[in-house]
Image 1 (cartoon, rainbow, N blue to C red):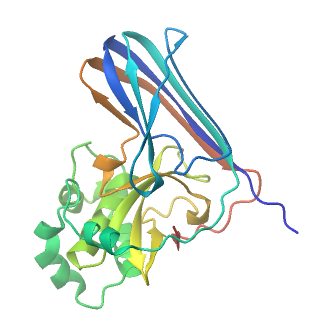
Image 2: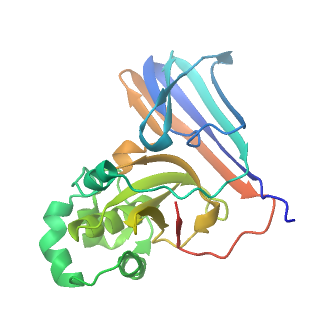
Length: 259
């Protein structure tokens, strides 16, 4: 019998907090695993967060950061277990709505003309992969901006896939994840699409094997899945480090997989 593959992942964030602020972190994997640690310190003193349950198993950690040098470290070790996620009626309705970074209502006339009634998630994903160049973007860029510039990072690829599919009346949403095999290593973003009653991952970057992804957060778009949100006060993120790897061989780089 093959030994289950163990995935190890985590991140390190460093912030300079000039004025006390409230930090909301989305760095822990969804559905608490057996082995994980989250430590937050300011000038070497431990600060305790509180966990807030969000949609789709997302776990947020909210912490009050006093002024000083803050360090956040998260480590997790888990054996991923495939568990197909069924699409509920409410999830399907929400995943068809326009959102901050995916204004599908604005894109609908163009999308229907470009793709027609026979469009598939695989076809749209391949189209985005061929159209875009992996490069850079602004934090405020929406799928409309990405369509114009033809460039972006993983979240922009995912936003464009999601936006086009919603415009074609196919439910789609965004998930952030740890991604063994991703290079350069970072937090990753992919689209989740309702296919035959199940959520299925579609990664238009094709940069990491979909079966190895560890879900962190799920939402309408990147506004719901940001790894760090600061409210009030004044703080600057000065360093980000992310790691994710398995103890076995990586599977083939398939751009789709059951979520």
